[in-house]
Length: 194
Image 1: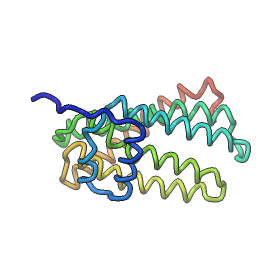
Image 2 (image 1 turned 180 degrees about the vertical axis):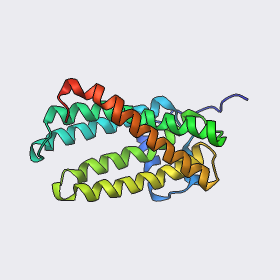
Image 3 (image 1 turned 180 degrees about the horizontal axis):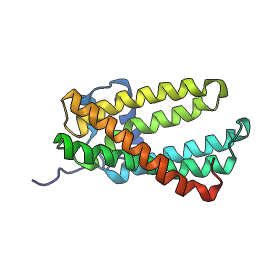
Image 4 (image 1 turned 45 degrees about the horizontal axis):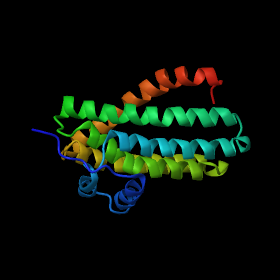
């Protein structure tokens, strides 16, 4: 069976699709958009979020203790796309291998980018307020879990709640180990850390 023809979405299209996904969260909403773009569009969109996040974090770094302007700039430029790639790759591989998901990586990356980008930018914007840091982090994490669960159901065609939930949980654990303990220290050590 050949892959379906994809419509190559622009950033403007993706922004409108993000609004739809965030305002009408359901696997059906994700299904509407999962084949409208692919891996290149997903990573361009995530790269845009990384750039926006890096600039905001670097601009406000002097207001926070223990972080540097360059550390914030480069860590976000490097780690946001890497983390996104590792996480969506883990969702795809785990969902297919262990839970018989039938989605394609292109669908996983594209659908995840539609909620990940606006939520990561929102988290960065609200995170510049020092007193709100922990609360913003918690709320953005909860939103990422909810939207991630719906995106797994859609992009991997895993309608069983347990399979979708376990795919998301295992991908998060694998992402935490690979990015947090291996990739981040390697990428950030030349930059002096934070």
